Amino acid sequence: MRFVVHARDSVDSTQTEAQRLATRGAPEGTVVIARHQRAGRGQRGHGWWDDPGDSLLASLLLRPSAPPATAPQLSLMAGLAVADALETVGVDARIRWPNDVLVRERKVCGILAEASSGRAAGGGHRAGDVHHVILGIGINLNQTRFPAALADRATSLRLVTGRVHDRDAILAALLAQIGSRYTTWLAAGFRSLRSDWLAHSLLPGQIVRLPDGTLGAGEDVRDDGVLLARVADGRLVPVVSGRSVEEAPAHVAGG
Ligand code: BTN
Image (cartoon, rainbow, N blue to C red):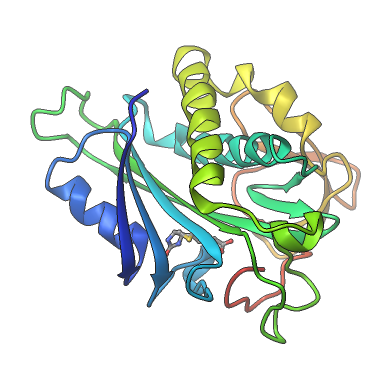
Protein backbone atom coordinates (compact mmCIF):
# COMPACT_ATOMS: atom_id res chain seq x y z
CA MET A 1 0.00 0.00 0.00
CA ARG A 2 1.33 3.43 -0.93
CA PHE A 3 1.12 6.29 1.57
CA VAL A 4 1.38 9.98 0.72
CA VAL A 5 2.00 12.08 3.81
CA HIS A 6 0.83 15.70 4.00
CA ALA A 7 2.72 17.29 6.91
CA ARG A 8 1.26 20.46 8.42
CA ASP A 9 2.45 22.62 11.26
CA SER A 10 -0.88 23.62 12.76
CA VAL A 11 -4.36 22.55 11.63
CA ASP A 12 -7.85 22.63 13.09
CA SER A 13 -7.90 18.82 13.10
CA THR A 14 -6.05 16.35 10.91
CA GLN A 15 -9.41 14.55 10.61
CA THR A 16 -11.02 17.64 9.11
CA GLU A 17 -8.06 18.23 6.81
CA ALA A 18 -8.15 14.58 5.64
CA GLN A 19 -11.90 14.93 5.09
CA ARG A 20 -11.29 18.01 2.92
CA LEU A 21 -8.72 16.06 0.87
CA ALA A 22 -11.10 13.07 0.61
CA THR A 23 -13.86 15.32 -0.74
CA ARG A 24 -11.45 16.53 -3.42
CA GLY A 25 -10.81 12.92 -4.46
CA ALA A 26 -7.58 12.15 -2.59
CA PRO A 27 -6.59 8.49 -2.96
CA GLU A 28 -6.48 5.75 -0.37
CA GLY A 29 -3.24 6.01 1.58
CA THR A 30 -3.43 9.80 1.96
CA VAL A 31 -2.12 10.71 5.42
CA VAL A 32 -2.32 14.07 7.18
CA ILE A 33 -0.03 14.76 10.14
CA ALA A 34 0.37 17.92 12.18
CA ARG A 35 2.58 19.27 14.96
CA HIS A 36 -0.44 20.83 16.61
CA GLN A 37 -4.23 20.75 16.33
CA ARG A 38 -6.25 23.80 17.30
CA ALA A 39 -9.47 21.79 17.49
CA GLY A 40 -8.42 18.15 17.86
CA ARG A 41 -11.33 15.74 18.07
CA GLY A 42 -11.76 12.76 20.38
CA GLN A 43 -14.42 10.10 20.70
CA ARG A 44 -18.06 10.95 21.46
CA GLY A 45 -17.71 14.63 20.68
CA HIS A 46 -14.87 15.28 23.13
CA GLY A 47 -11.81 17.32 22.25
CA TRP A 48 -8.27 16.05 21.94
CA TRP A 49 -5.68 18.32 23.48
CA ASP A 50 -2.00 18.37 22.54
CA ASP A 51 1.16 20.21 23.48
CA PRO A 52 2.64 21.28 20.12
CA GLY A 53 5.33 18.89 18.91
CA ASP A 54 4.89 16.26 21.62
CA SER A 55 2.40 13.94 19.87
CA LEU A 56 1.96 11.99 16.71
CA LEU A 57 -1.30 13.38 15.32
CA ALA A 58 -2.26 11.51 12.16
CA SER A 59 -5.31 10.87 9.99
CA LEU A 60 -5.26 8.19 7.33
CA LEU A 61 -7.71 7.94 4.45
CA LEU A 62 -8.90 4.46 3.45
CA ARG A 63 -11.30 3.62 0.65
CA PRO A 64 -12.29 -0.01 1.24
CA SER A 65 -14.91 -1.60 -0.96
CA ALA A 66 -16.92 -2.95 1.95
CA PRO A 67 -20.35 -2.63 3.59
CA PRO A 68 -20.67 0.12 6.25
CA ALA A 69 -21.29 -2.48 8.98
CA THR A 70 -17.68 -3.61 8.61
CA ALA A 71 -16.24 -0.12 9.21
CA PRO A 72 -15.89 -0.55 13.02
CA GLN A 73 -13.55 -3.47 12.30
CA LEU A 74 -11.11 -0.94 10.85
CA SER A 75 -10.89 0.86 14.16
CA LEU A 76 -10.05 -2.48 15.81
CA MET A 77 -7.48 -3.05 13.07
CA ALA A 78 -5.97 0.38 13.80
CA GLY A 79 -5.62 -0.40 17.52
CA LEU A 80 -3.78 -3.60 16.66
CA ALA A 81 -1.50 -1.77 14.20
CA VAL A 82 -0.65 0.81 16.90
CA ALA A 83 0.17 -1.97 19.39
CA ASP A 84 2.34 -3.63 16.72
CA ALA A 85 4.14 -0.35 16.00
CA LEU A 86 4.79 0.30 19.70
CA GLU A 87 6.26 -3.19 20.02
CA THR A 88 8.92 -2.17 17.47
CA VAL A 89 10.19 0.42 19.98
CA GLY A 90 10.06 -2.03 22.87
CA VAL A 91 6.72 -0.95 24.34
CA ASP A 92 4.28 -3.63 25.43
CA ALA A 93 0.86 -2.07 24.85
CA ARG A 94 -2.65 -3.44 25.36
CA ILE A 95 -5.87 -2.58 23.53
CA ARG A 96 -8.84 -1.58 25.65
CA TRP A 97 -11.92 -2.42 23.61
CA PRO A 98 -12.70 -1.01 21.22
CA ASN A 99 -9.53 0.88 20.41
CA ASP A 100 -7.75 2.74 23.21
CA VAL A 101 -4.12 1.70 23.49
CA LEU A 102 -2.76 1.49 27.02
CA VAL A 103 0.59 0.92 28.64
CA ARG A 104 0.50 -0.13 32.27
CA GLU A 105 -3.19 0.87 32.49
CA ARG A 106 -2.62 4.38 31.16
CA LYS A 107 -3.72 5.61 27.76
CA VAL A 108 -0.92 6.27 25.32
CA CYS A 109 -3.01 6.43 22.14
CA GLY A 110 -6.58 7.28 21.15
CA ILE A 111 -8.23 6.37 17.86
CA LEU A 112 -11.17 8.01 16.13
CA ALA A 113 -12.59 6.24 13.06
CA GLU A 114 -14.98 8.28 10.94
CA ALA A 115 -16.76 6.52 8.08
CA SER A 116 -18.74 7.96 5.24
CA SER A 117 -20.91 5.74 3.09
CA GLY A 118 -22.87 6.15 -0.12
CA ARG A 119 -22.17 5.87 -3.79
CA ALA A 120 -18.73 7.17 -4.67
CA ALA A 121 -18.62 9.39 -7.74
CA GLY A 122 -16.77 7.22 -10.22
CA GLY A 123 -14.96 5.55 -7.37
CA GLY A 124 -15.80 2.03 -8.44
CA HIS A 125 -17.64 1.23 -5.23
CA ARG A 126 -20.94 -0.61 -5.04
CA ALA A 127 -23.90 1.52 -3.98
CA GLY A 128 -24.16 1.47 -0.19
CA ASP A 129 -20.52 0.51 0.34
CA VAL A 130 -18.26 2.56 2.58
CA HIS A 131 -17.19 5.59 0.62
CA HIS A 132 -14.20 6.24 2.80
CA VAL A 133 -12.96 5.81 6.35
CA ILE A 134 -10.64 8.27 8.06
CA LEU A 135 -8.63 6.72 10.88
CA GLY A 136 -7.46 9.38 13.30
CA ILE A 137 -4.63 8.30 15.56
CA GLY A 138 -3.14 10.34 18.39
CA ILE A 139 -0.07 8.87 20.10
CA ASN A 140 1.49 10.56 23.13
CA LEU A 141 5.19 10.63 22.30
CA ASN A 142 7.28 12.93 24.41
CA GLN A 143 5.08 14.49 27.09
CA THR A 144 6.65 14.42 30.53
CA ARG A 145 3.53 15.77 32.20
CA PHE A 146 -0.14 16.10 31.40
CA PRO A 147 -2.88 18.53 32.41
CA ALA A 148 -4.31 17.67 35.83
CA ALA A 149 -7.46 16.16 34.34
CA LEU A 150 -5.39 13.55 32.53
CA ALA A 151 -2.45 13.11 34.84
CA ASP A 152 -3.53 9.84 36.45
CA ARG A 153 -4.66 8.07 33.29
CA ALA A 154 -2.42 9.22 30.45
CA THR A 155 1.13 8.32 29.62
CA SER A 156 3.61 8.85 26.81
CA LEU A 157 6.25 6.74 25.12
CA ARG A 158 8.89 8.92 26.77
CA LEU A 159 7.46 8.29 30.23
CA VAL A 160 7.35 4.53 29.72
CA THR A 161 10.72 4.11 28.00
CA GLY A 162 12.75 6.95 29.50
CA ARG A 163 13.86 8.19 26.09
CA VAL A 164 12.74 10.71 23.50
CA HIS A 165 10.90 9.31 20.46
CA ASP A 166 11.13 10.57 16.93
CA ARG A 167 7.73 11.32 15.43
CA ASP A 168 8.68 10.35 11.89
CA ALA A 169 10.17 7.01 13.00
CA ILE A 170 6.98 6.14 14.91
CA LEU A 171 4.88 7.25 11.94
CA ALA A 172 6.92 5.01 9.60
CA ALA A 173 6.47 2.03 11.95
CA LEU A 174 2.75 2.75 12.25
CA LEU A 175 2.18 3.02 8.49
CA ALA A 176 4.10 -0.22 7.88
CA GLN A 177 1.87 -2.03 10.38
CA ILE A 178 -1.33 -0.47 9.06
CA GLY A 179 -0.34 -1.37 5.50
CA SER A 180 0.16 -4.97 6.49
CA ARG A 181 -2.89 -5.38 8.76
CA TYR A 182 -5.21 -3.55 6.33
CA THR A 183 -4.09 -5.74 3.42
CA THR A 184 -4.89 -8.82 5.52
CA TRP A 185 -8.28 -7.37 6.48
CA LEU A 186 -9.17 -6.60 2.86
CA ALA A 187 -8.32 -10.16 1.82
CA ALA A 188 -9.85 -12.13 4.68
CA GLY A 189 -11.77 -9.84 7.04
CA PHE A 190 -11.45 -9.30 10.77
CA ARG A 191 -11.47 -13.07 11.39
CA SER A 192 -7.87 -13.13 10.11
CA LEU A 193 -6.82 -10.51 12.70
CA ARG A 194 -8.98 -11.73 15.57
CA SER A 195 -6.48 -13.93 17.41
CA ASP A 196 -3.71 -11.30 17.23
CA TRP A 197 -6.19 -8.64 18.33
CA LEU A 198 -7.26 -10.74 21.33
CA ALA A 199 -3.65 -11.45 22.27
CA HIS A 200 -3.00 -7.69 22.47
CA SER A 201 -6.27 -6.82 24.21
CA LEU A 202 -7.44 -6.54 27.81
CA LEU A 203 -10.03 -9.25 27.12
CA PRO A 204 -11.24 -11.32 28.77
CA GLY A 205 -12.25 -9.40 31.86
CA GLN A 206 -12.47 -5.80 30.70
CA ILE A 207 -15.55 -4.19 32.20
CA VAL A 208 -17.67 -2.38 29.63
CA ARG A 209 -20.75 -0.22 29.83
CA LEU A 210 -23.44 -1.54 27.51
CA PRO A 211 -25.63 0.74 25.39
CA ASP A 212 -28.47 0.34 27.96
CA GLY A 213 -26.20 1.67 30.72
CA THR A 214 -25.62 -1.64 32.53
CA LEU A 215 -22.20 -3.22 32.97
CA GLY A 216 -20.83 -6.38 31.45
CA ALA A 217 -17.54 -8.26 31.44
CA GLY A 218 -16.02 -8.44 27.98
CA GLU A 219 -15.09 -12.03 27.12
CA ASP A 220 -14.36 -12.29 23.44
CA VAL A 221 -14.71 -10.67 20.04
CA ARG A 222 -16.47 -12.46 17.20
CA ASP A 223 -15.12 -12.93 13.70
CA ASP A 224 -17.09 -9.83 12.68
CA GLY A 225 -15.46 -7.69 15.40
CA VAL A 226 -18.52 -7.56 17.67
CA LEU A 227 -17.72 -7.78 21.40
CA LEU A 228 -19.28 -10.56 23.49
CA ALA A 229 -19.92 -9.49 27.09
CA ARG A 230 -21.20 -11.49 30.05
CA VAL A 231 -24.05 -9.66 31.79
CA ALA A 232 -25.46 -9.93 35.32
CA ASP A 233 -27.95 -12.69 34.51
CA GLY A 234 -25.19 -14.84 32.99
CA ARG A 235 -26.05 -14.30 29.33
CA LEU A 236 -23.34 -13.59 26.77
CA VAL A 237 -24.56 -10.61 24.74
CA PRO A 238 -23.17 -9.05 21.56
CA VAL A 239 -22.11 -5.42 21.91
CA VAL A 240 -21.73 -3.29 18.83
CA SER A 241 -21.39 -0.03 20.67
CA GLY A 242 -20.76 0.75 24.30
CA ARG A 243 -17.77 1.90 26.18
CA SER A 244 -15.19 0.79 28.61
CA VAL A 245 -15.99 2.01 32.11
CA GLU A 246 -12.37 2.80 32.82
CA GLU A 247 -12.76 5.77 30.52
CA ALA A 248 -13.41 9.01 32.30
CA PRO A 249 -16.64 10.66 31.15
CA ALA A 250 -15.03 13.91 30.03
CA HIS A 251 -11.53 13.56 28.75
CA VAL A 252 -9.94 16.40 26.93
CA ALA A 253 -7.13 14.56 25.32
CA GLY A 254 -4.07 12.48 25.53
CA GLY A 255 -5.72 10.24 28.02
C1 BTN B 1 -10.09 9.37 21.61
O1 BTN B 1 -10.94 10.13 22.11
O2 BTN B 1 -9.54 8.49 22.28
C2 BTN B 1 -9.75 9.50 20.15
C3 BTN B 1 -8.70 10.54 19.94
C4 BTN B 1 -8.25 10.68 18.51
C5 BTN B 1 -7.25 11.79 18.35
C6 BTN B 1 -6.67 11.84 16.97
S1 BTN B 1 -5.29 12.95 16.89
C7 BTN B 1 -5.30 12.84 15.16
C8 BTN B 1 -6.74 12.84 14.72
N1 BTN B 1 -7.23 14.21 14.60
C9 BTN B 1 -8.19 14.48 15.50
O3 BTN B 1 -8.77 15.58 15.60
N2 BTN B 1 -8.43 13.41 16.25
C10 BTN B 1 -7.60 12.28 15.86
